Length: 159
Image (cartoon, rainbow, N blue to C red):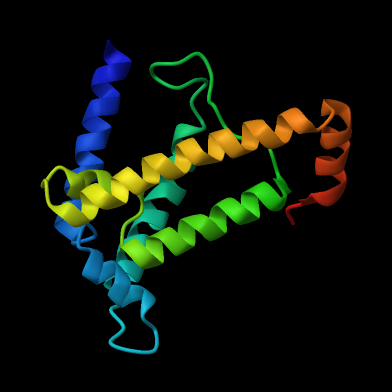
C-alpha cells in the first residue's frame, strides 16, 4: 500500500510539474522542435532543471542500501545499442514531433478530455499493442539461439 501511495504521489508531483512548466501544451513542445522557425527554448530550460535535480538525487539515493519500498534498486544493466532500441527511439521522436506530446505530458493532457491528447494516447496504446504483435510474430519465426546470436553480434556496447 505504501508503494502505491508513494507512486501515486510521485505521479501527481510529476503531473503538476508538467502543468506548471507548460509542457502539456503541444504547441510549446512543437515550438521547441521548430529550430528553423519561431524556436521556443523554454523546454530546454525545463530539461536542464530536471537533469540537474536528477544528477544530485540519483547519487544521493544510490548511497542508501536499498529503496524505501523495495528490496533492491532496479537499475538497468543492458548497455547494447541494437536495431530495436534505435527504431524505438526513432518512433518515439517522430510521435513526439508530430503530436507534440510524449507519454507523460500526453497522460496529463488527456485528463482535460480534449481531442488532441486523447487521440495521441489512443494511437500510443495502439502502437504499443502493434509492436507486441509484430515482435511476437517475428520472434516466433526465428530459432531462439540464432536470434540471440544475431542480436549480440549486431549490437555494440555504449561508450
